[in-house]
Length: 77
Image (cartoon, rainbow, N blue to C red; front, side, top):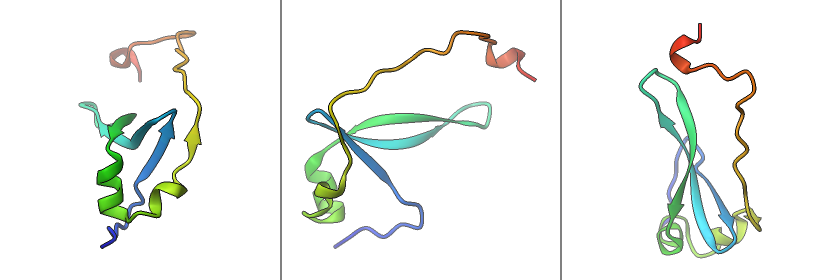
């Protein structure tokens, strides 16, 4: 049984770890993009055994801070 959604869920594999990419709601009404560790078996149960082969694969990732011209969110207009 394959899961049918109107909104496409996204997954990536970084190294040997599977992540689900989600938009997490924020208190100010916006969203922040997050990587949530996901389970291979759960993905297989939800989408079928062949779906994992379609997930993009990466060797690694890094987070680059953006602190130039930083303004706290509560001072933004």
